[in-house]
Image: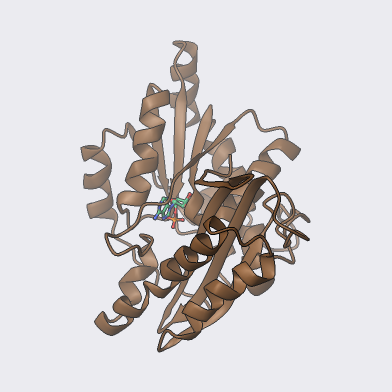
Length: 288
Ligand code: AMP
């Protein structure tokens, strides 16, 4: 993998990486198209990373669909599918006392990190190893996982990886549900209720556009929609400053992140919307 990237760079070309856990959908493929537009060579990694799953989470059940994934990668013009074995990324087993884990203090007691202890340590640890294995010039992440993207960017800066971290917008089903491999866990009834998360974000966004600037009232507008959804348990719905992941005292000009997580049947769903506020005006935005 490294020899490939070194050859590409020696020829004056760029390598773009899209890290995934497989079970590829249009969200992943949109990131690959963004990578292809900026890099002559594009690598997709497929690795269901054990260290980012909690003991009671869905590591064993996570959908593994390698043959279909490889066909989708070929169709989108991806040059390399990098599909390492766990022992290749974790020669010491991962997480043991003689191993190295990347921990970022920033963001730890916020949003998903507060509900999934150790999750982002696993994410950052595997991203660091993937960067070293693939040696990309740039890597693309989805805004769907907003906290992950922000933490990966901070880790990349802190460890001085020579990798440009880039973001792609969230790809959604026609009814608003953000695409996710975990949507496969939903029964037909749950699938209908799952739109509550994007509807909650829409309600909070509408309140923002109509002039509401109190973060707690904005969050309440979203929570109300989630509370009305049968079978869905809200983990959090928060309106935060992306610099701190904490609610701002008052919403001012700049970026505002609205993010929610909910349990529905076997699935844990997350979604978010980023707004750029400029006086009265409110626009959809990317975090970076
Ligand atoms: P995963 O395979 O779920 O770990 O996701 C791999 C990458 O795809 C991450 O950077 C995700 O943020 C991104 N991603 C997942 N779902 C979506 C989506 N619906 N839209 C855009 N990007 C996504």
